[in-house]
Image 1: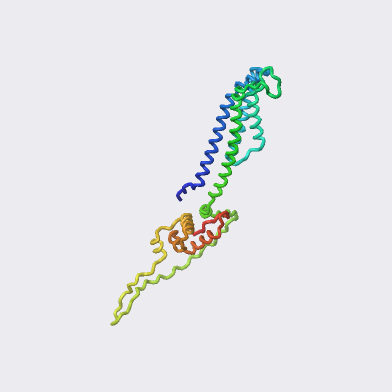
Image 2: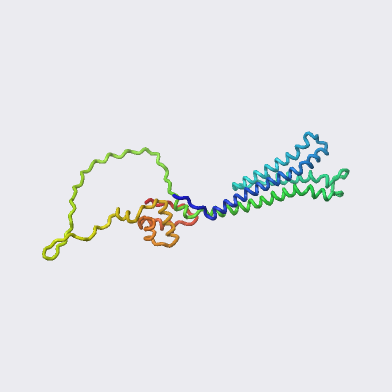
Length: 287
């Protein structure tokens, strides 16, 4: 059976999933660039507070790895419909705010200033060192909202993909019986029925003249099958009957198009009429 083209809902789902993956990639790229920009300031901040130069450079990669991990994992879980817990948000904000504070410490409290309410603020330094971490934090929260909106839309579209066509074409699978089969007794040969010679029908006319009957013999089931062409498969016949049902065709018209009997078409019409939109799948009638 030929493959069906993707429905509009399925194409929208694929586009939304691609958009979701793109948002995750953008967030990771911005995170890498922002943390690379802040690496020097964080390292100098650690050295100024009596951290050995041999280990001071480890502070920024430590925060970067933690923040990058939560961003990537959140994105992958969202693609599978799993919403991260509140701890993921706490980690994201802690890493972002920690990076911002270490970058802007010198602009808020210059050397010689007492800790408290900032009074000798360096405005240019504060803006310069605030943009990368603040941009990363706000972008992460915005993409989190986008992911939730995309997942809600995908859930609605997936409900639309489950249509009556799939329920009609789904074959009914019966469990295989594991009980031992008892062999049936051998059938006794039956005597062949005597062959009756074909009798040619005659018509008696006037003057006792006899003429052969010129009426053609009635059509047989084999002849009808040859006239109607090859029988469609069960799946193809079910699709034709479903399409005729939606178009309002009569049972006789559907029987001709699907190469099935009217009783078979009547049975499938009844199942389609009694099957609700969100009900169980309609199995294909054998025939």
